[in-house]
Length: 263
Image (cartoon, rainbow, N blue to C red; front, side, top):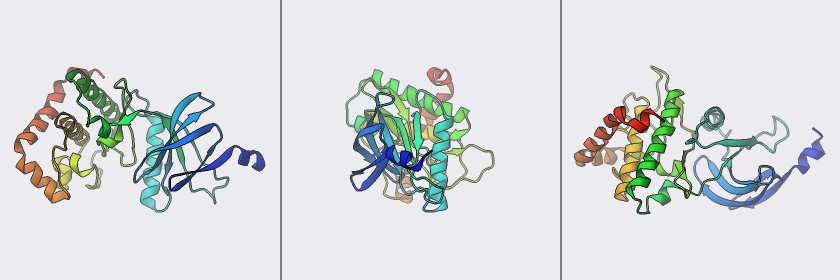
């Protein structure tokens, strides 16, 4: 493609403390969130004629770890297709050569809020059940594809006003290969399963534990197992043994949970 023509396809705009250089098809950029993985803006896509979310990965190639996470997120989002997993609509970079390559933009479906905001609301049993059903359907599809999310938490689960739910952020996801040594530093502390806290081997069921903690938080309106570090979180687990048994019961219940087995 002609260099001048390519340059005209993009424009730059300051969004908060970051500069977004995006295709001209994306207009009306507004910041909606940020995190360790990058900054997210809403925008209107004039080609698809719909609102979208654009995520600028934060310095994805500054080291090997960040590069792996960026690659992992892109590949998994491209490969996984499910109604309860966030959809990847487009991916692009404004750089023109491999030597200049440093920015990656992911264009995704735009949702209304994440569960952090929903937790503050008083939801009836029907809505809570529907949200749980969709979370389980999403992680069941991931597990069937041999993928462990490893970072399920309210901020990584988004919803629409009609209670439609989608799981996102796959920067820490891994394939569930048997015997693969996986780092214990996964899952935000409040949602870590006991085997993760203790540095033991773990499998896909750590995602189910996280879902149990999230649902308990939605019912209680507060974190189930708080702690400012790994030790305090473990002590919180021990001091709330009745909650642990509830989570364990929830986990074993899933083996016969009708809607989970038919997602």
